Length: 122
Image (cartoon, rainbow, N blue to C red):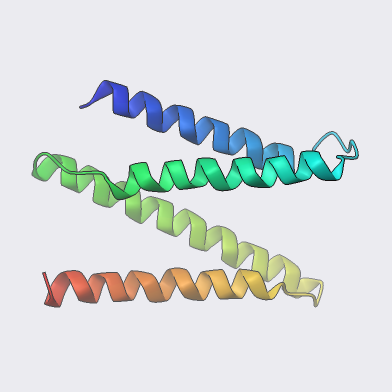
């Protein structure tokens, strides 16, 4: 296990989470437009760093590949479950955000396409 890469992943993930929570404005302080803009830029930047780290992951052996597949499966199910919960809660309010449905569809379709691609073309 590459310790330095793991530390970078944890650091990038932690900063991304802090920026996302700050963007929710939990203290109810009014943020000036420049602060909001900087938070958006920071979120995009650290998400791209996080995505590049995830995309460049390489399994060293079968056990490592299995751990990565399980982590991917769990994260997919947690993300999809969160979206379904959001759709259900907003459904009770009769105001479903189309983004929730669009992202859930994108997740499910991309999962199926990736499975088909891996099975038939690799």
